[in-house]
Image 1 (cartoon, rainbow, N blue to C red):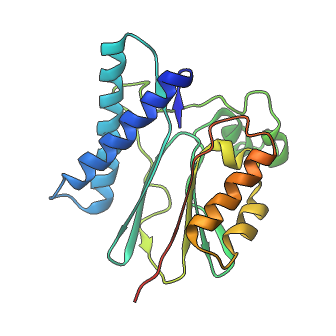
Image 2 (cartoon, one colour):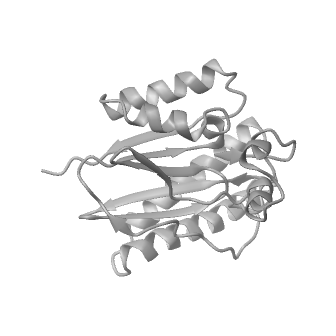
Length: 206
């Protein structure tokens, strides 16, 4: 999810997306989880270089998910999120790198108060801000099971659709594409006030 105005935000997210994929799949040696984290670090460096070339300030969140054989790996920076629905239970793999999320963790705000807080878009960490930064491995690696359904989304979705609604829609026995479109429509119906990125993937092992 890019930051820096419409055109710059779009460019920022494109740089990150392309760099993460290129770097991860071009890495042969390290363990897959570490390879993914390094790919996000490289995307951060690439974005800083792009800012220098263009002479503008840009930034991007990043939530990356990899299925490798029987395992799942994730890496995360910012306030986009990764969810998993397994056996009817929704788990959030990522922890938002945002001011209000930190206030919730400290007990200063409730979850509901955080959703409506005026500083809910203030990030504590994003790609393109510092040359050296930590990347969270999220709640992975974990075992990939048949029927698991994963959601990767920006705050344009989870800021308007709460977790119980996400759980209900992910549980629908429809294709991943249809579920993603249902989530997108719900966020748009509620105003679609921010960029909405939605990817749904379902594990189907033979």
